[in-house]
Image 1: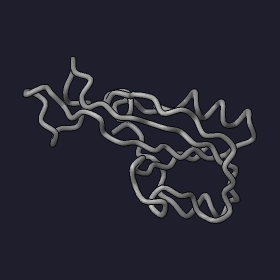
Image 2 (image 1 turned 135 degrees about the vertical axis):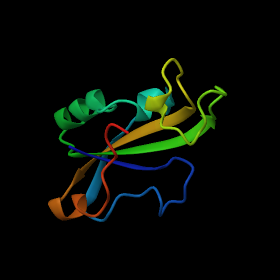
Image 3 (image 1 turned 90 degrees about the vertical axis):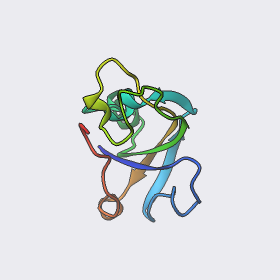
Image 4 (image 1 turned 90 degrees about the horizontal axis):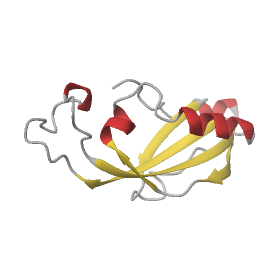
Length: 115
């Protein structure tokens, strides 16, 4: 299942899926640490499984930073995976699930894995 990302507080154009995608479910906004969001290979495994059960084939992950990193030994230029023992920044994350045509799925870059 494809996972796409966009800014939660972005414009409608920045956070919309391509034509050919139909919204199935919008999840509630939840807080998520940087290490949970960007420090694992499949941060949306549960959401992808739930989406598949509902007939969806794509996730749109909307996120907005709520609090930047507070660890002076982990500069923002470093990947969070290089900073053991810290959760990093905190984000507000909302996941939307979509049913998309194959052409629509090919129009957006997938969420980077294992950053």
